[in-house]
Length: 170
Image 1 (cartoon, rainbow, N blue to C red):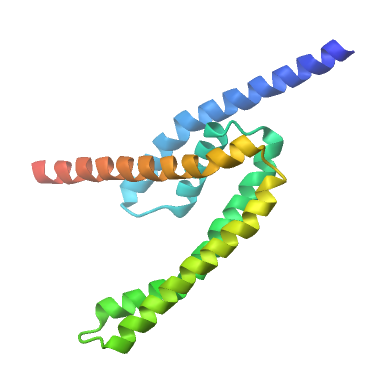
Image 2 (image 1 turned 90 degrees about the vertical axis):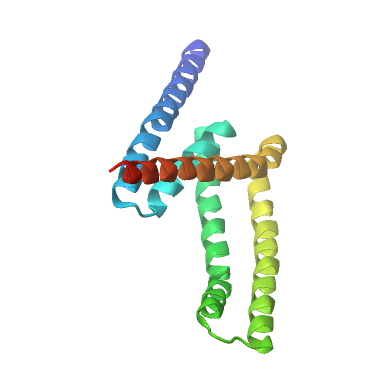
């Protein structure tokens, strides 16, 4: 009975690894095709890539992934919402012909507040993450997040260069 239990766990782990391996191979290809055909940023495909990357790099178990990824998505959404006013003010500043000192200071103050709010959110969610992830995985999470961002930007730039290069040849 015990042997059958471990066999089932072993099979489930293999299935999990194979599934995520396949996702890592096929998602970037389909996402590349979708994003490049329209030439627009596809937020949903970005989030899928990020989820798969983080799950794989941190070697999250299915249970950890089921608990951690939704919280991570929630944190990112709340940080995005916190920065809304800063982005709006910055956009307005770029469009103003002659912004004054008050405009500059208001924008700076708002954007500094966003940084503070994001730090508070990070702390709040760190406490939640501690209940899900082992300390080592929690420690490595930020490193993995930055690694994904660097690779995503690097790959996006390479794709843009290829597309621009193709246009020049025509």
